[in-house]
Length: 347
Image 1 (cartoon, rainbow, N blue to C red):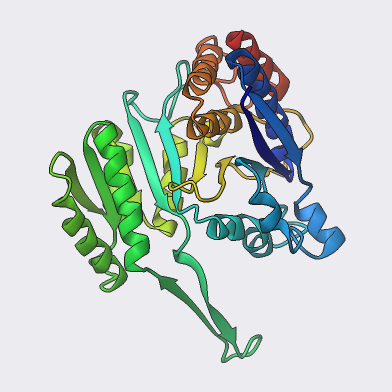
Image 2 (image 1 turned 90 degrees about the vertical axis):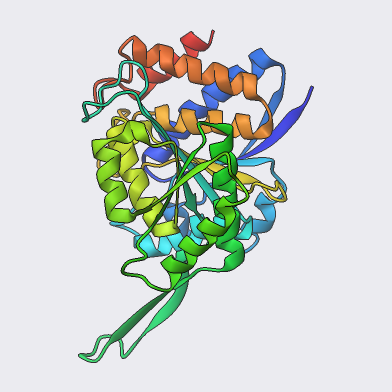
């Protein structure tokens, strides 16, 4: 029996609850499909930082490299540890070290879920560049705390980085409905975003079967609200993709339904899967977090590992639960109630 080694990082707050729920579903799906999952859980979190002074140990990356995939819950507890510390101490180092340059976030309404828009028939795959751009961490501050303080944040866009994420987007569009939307702000950012547009135009010639449209970020935000059904695959930079996918989560009913994958497409290192939502300290330990985003992310993990039938079974089970009204309304059902509904549908 084939067995996959999975690193679990539940993290902070509701991350622990939704990771537990996702693992229950994963274990059942694997058992039914005839493959094994071997979990190893790591306590890396803001609580770990307060104990040790680091979000993960010095050999954390080396440790994770031995796994087939990583399932992350949520990281962050801003009242205790600054978000800039938790993000740059755990999530971003993992993404960069393992070349998880493609952040994939699907946006569609599950059966029984009511979004805020009149439109229901949309299916958007948002692809966010995940390792450079505006989140490169290049810059600094001088004369700190004085009237002359200066802060500089430099975005880094490389030809290799931009080309590979756009090429990944073209391939996804080719496998879906053949439409690619490339998002920039090249009217205002005349270096990095014009650079992005030029590479998009050059690559488009290699994909004559894909219809390519370039949008400015503000126009894309409006289109996602006014005409989401017109969109197929969206490709954007690290910052723009981050913002657009929160909008995508909103139109699909909320962050409780927003799943994501941090992919290393050439599979030279493990990929990481996580719900888009944060640790939600205000509802942590109340047992009311919606685990669907985490379960959906877990299904994406199985699909990436090549277990498509099991991944599809999980997605059908999620849909059956929400169609029956369980987990479809934010805040209505408890975490365990939603988890059991998905498990029962999986049976």
